[in-house]
Length: 126
Image 1: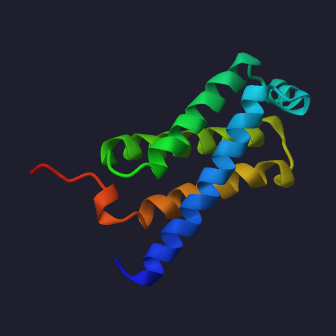
Image 2: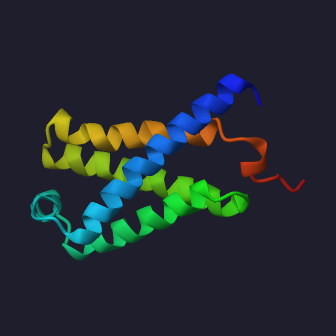
């Protein structure tokens, strides 16, 4: 892995982790603005707890060394959560400024996954 790719990986991964951790914590705390927002998107309030817990667990999985299969699942979970968030925003008529955080986290997820080092990838069993 080149030095450039390592830098891209770590910058995107740390920003992804910070974004997912901070939003996960806010969701677990059930901040009033988040409750209003999730209800406007059409989801029940308990969905915040589910999202918050899985985001925090995903951050741990992505940052802890080893366990490449768990990392793949965490990246997949982030991808599904952020694409789901984007489609929810589109379906509910949210503004672009409301969609931007989900879009940014989706891009960071993709970049981090793409540039991850070989020891963080699953090995194909042929």
